[in-house]
Image (cartoon, rainbow, N blue to C red):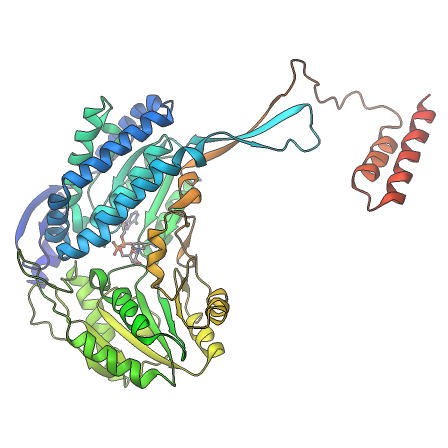
Amino acid sequence: MVSTLQASSRAPDSIECINPATGEELGRVPVDKRAAVEQAVERARQAQLSWRDSSFRQRRELLRSLADMVLERTDDICDLVSRDSGKTHEHALMGEVWPVCEKLRWTLRNGEKHLRREAVSPGLLMHKRAYIEYMPLGVIGAIVPWNYPFQNLMNPVVTALMAGNAVVVKPSEWVAYSSLRFAQMIHEVLRAHNLSPHLVSVVNGYGETGQALIESGVDGVLFIGSVENGRKVLATAAQSVTPVVAELGGKDPFVICDDADLEHAIDSALTGCFVSAGQNCVASERLLVFEEVAPEVEARLAAKVRSLHYGAPEAGRVLDVGSLTTPQQRQIVKALVEDALAKGARLLAGGVDLDGPGCTFAPTLLAGVTEDMNIMHQETFGPVMVIVRVRDEAHAIEVANRTSLGLSASVFSRDRSRARRIARAIQSGMCAINDFGGMTYMAQDLPFGGVKRSGFGRMNGRDGLRAFTQARAVLDDRFPFSVPARAFPVRKGDLERTKAALRILYGRGFQPRLRGVEGLLRAWRGRG
Ligand code: NAD
């Protein structure tokens, strides 16, 4: 079945959508070619012309209705996510619906605060008022991956609408089926508010459709995906100098110190590694465990990982881990595990057994992982827990930073100052102390994004909202009269007067300032 899936999903005119866990055929979704993408962007531009002037109250009412829709249709959403991605219903609910609800709640409560006009100091120009207006960018092009079909689509939609934009989303070809249906749900809400459905469009297709979207004149791009395609997106956007928020891969470290609460760390590590079958940009890809506690951690984790139930999600069946979403991903995970085992890693649970249904992969635990193994460097994006022993704090930090990626990190220690010290030294966009790093997503006030090759720009929080705006600087009259800046004609003595003024304004201490006043008087006398 794997090869059928691979071959059929790359047809040029339509995408064959298949449940990766069971092989069930879901249907075909037409590929949007360049002309269709350009039309979607043009219609979005027209729709945005009135939406950009909407009040914050109108925007909140729309988001409130979207939240109502999500709650009313939770079962449909989880079912679609599960059938399209192979994820369990539980992970669809906890990992997708819940964060979307939280994003909506946060945006309803905080959106206006971060987007309304902001007064700032006019500096020396005391006769003026200065303020920043967060103007919508226009049309946002959001190109997103398959690992969170609902959340990846809704996240840019919520932020773009709140900031007064229209948005065209290009979901991954691997979740085209559910994405189209999510778009229909959003359109129902837009219509109920007498708004144009073109405010939110979904265009489906492969990489070419994503490229066409950037080339169709969008005003801002959000790209969530691999580093490799991120580079291509940046190169395309560079042609039109279009701003990009790039949310790329991760290889997150998860440090367990010798004084950590092991029970707590072990439970968090399981969450970090196996939620969404590890197909999580902030998955805990490398467990860095202090030597003193490593044997105990390995033994306890081995028992827990072996007890996880995995397989194809079905109604009424309670599973811990569902299927992978793409056959390619299963092959990548398989190759990484095989390479590690060939180079001496110890298999403590799971392993490569592709006899399971669809794209399932057994939750796997590898210990004794070393630098020469590919799994230490390449993103796994699968249900594999990797244990690396570290000698001490300095060694943990060194290993944690020995990667080109820097998305999130977790540090476990009962000594909080030690944990904070380690966390600060790890190069990452986000970190959690005594928690799984991905939990930062649920604190929506926090910016979400990476450093190094994990990308730049931020989703979530104030920075994420403002990423879809242009911070326009305005200098306005404070009084009913205005004092124009006058640089001409240049007069004799201007140079001396200006130098004296600089000393008065910026001199350190009394003496230089006094010299400035003397200089000013001299310059004036000379003029007289
Ligand atoms: P991917 O890069 O293969 O695809 C992402 C999207 O880009 C898809 O919609 C794809 O069709 C499109 N695309 C491909 N080539 C393109 C091109 N040349 N121009 C424009 N668009 C193009 O990624 P994926 O396999 O779908 O997702 C997994 C990756 O996403 C992982 O690396 C994961 O870490 C990353 N990810 C990052 C975050 C984050 O917030 N940092 C979140 C989720 C996933």
